Length: 143
Image (cartoon, rainbow, N blue to C red; front, side):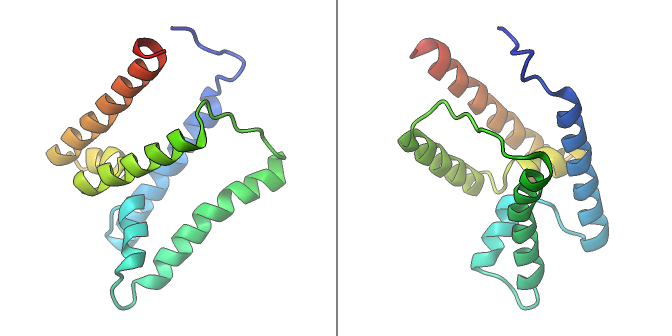
């Protein structure tokens, strides 16, 4: 395995992890809810009374953050080593996986593991294992 040292950004990754951890902790302390993206977005489709405003604000914040970064740091060129068909298939598989797993990586991996949830540990191991296997198959076995 080779590390692309020109694109290795440990400090920005650390800062992002710290921000995600702080946001997750603040959300559970202030609202008593888990900061799981799939649950928040899924709740937009079948929301309860008084539940819609914060969910919309959360999604708008997720959409505004990259735009704000673009304004501050300038445009970046994303690199995706897949065609549109593969990207759409991957997105659908992730969506199905979050429904079967009763949550996503942010809900289980960040919030669930910090609460020592056995269900979240199993879900996170399954997510990560599937990701490792997919990368190995796509980059080594099927390449």
